[in-house]
Image 1: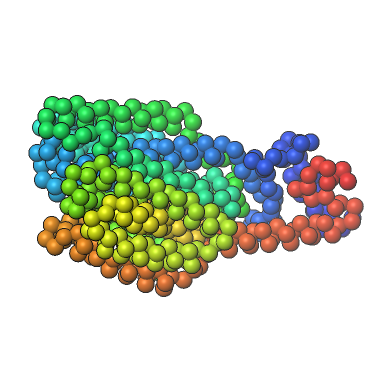
Image 2: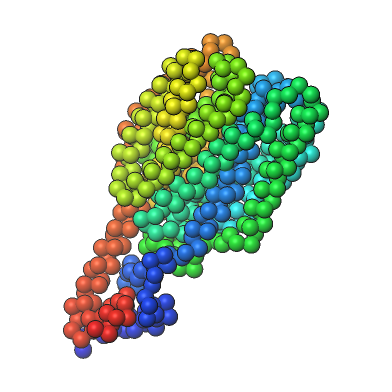
Length: 502
């Protein structure tokens, strides 16, 4: 027997011994399959098993749930800003800060939080995020008095700090738990939860808190709203403590297996940040992503003011228009995620959706003052479909451009850019609306969406993660071909039982 044949037989026997129980007579099912592949390991090839666990869907839906709870709190004040102004006797700018504090908190805390995500992993990050989110909701319960605006701001600060832990997780969770053909869809589901929370935040507060003149009655309605959000956050926190898992025992992809093989003492968070800052395509994406999402934050925060200016007394419909924006965006997010998994056309899809976001913003700007609410519903839905649909595209494109850097770090930089531009755009558009009206404010945002579209066109599509997976698959095919050429030992380590018997 030749040395090559003997090595092949030994490797096959060893992998069969280790993985035999997982490849029983019934074979792996579709939802919990095992893939065996070979990737380089030092100077010699070694078999690396990859596996998709059914519980990955439970993990991502649980993440979506607590992301929903947190995102709901971001917009729950802004969509009834005129009522909150009356209840706490504060200016519109103070109410705007109840939303903008989410953006402001993110900027100084993103780097320590992404460091914690890299060092401690998904479970610890999730526990901290949910503890802060739950604490914020109960602080707000105590703030349902007209003289306690400072307390409600404190509760919002706690919730905004929780958001720092949440926003960077979708792409990392998708990479850690899902297969190569599922990561974009899984990331979209993670973003979906956040957008669903914003949708509920647009819809529910105007229903729970009617615009009544009696302050005591108003306090009663506001307290009910706070109790509901606190109860939901508490239930989700308990579920996370019991159910949420750090990562699967066996990695889902060859790229994730390679990432796990890097010794912890060889990883430097500071060096990773510096590499990302020197990555020109990624930095172009950071700025263009910030411009797009910053515009979305400004539109969401100031939506009540824009609608009330042209349609007085329509607080409930303002919430419904916000709901339309987000629901359409959730559909866009899922469609874009599925499309990316099928086509891998990251730059082309990102650029197209960016241009359509610009067109949607222009149409919305010029139709808002026509006096027909049904027109606003349609144009707002089109705007939301593309502008919110862009979110998972940015996350996944960033991971492709920066692999094998941590997904949490790249997502964190994207979100940091979004928060900075969100604050700038919200304050600037608010001032422009006060002085020149809503049309001028919306045109202001359109100019920056145009700049972002041009910048996206200059991004070089260096798809590193996709290239790593393709190289691993190529090496696997080469290794499998070499093994199958050996006479009398045609079965490989990854063959099914019925193939070995034949």
